[in-house]
Length: 96
Image (cartoon, rainbow, N blue to C red):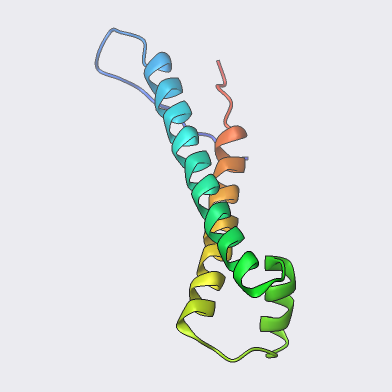
């Protein structure tokens, strides 16, 4: 567990500001997940197999490397990073 202590020189409470910033970041990340899923769906429809099937084929070196397939890999990796960030933000709790 990581702990972070924030202080402010202002007398106003900062908790609502931090809460709003975290919620906004979470919304942006979730929007990114939706955009990335749409891109992945486009690849899946074009190549007629799921992203998980594609990744298996890629890892077994069963596919020729093309720029488009590299983009597909990039989108899958982006989805994983976005989900990790979302999980991290959802785990943030205020100590007091």
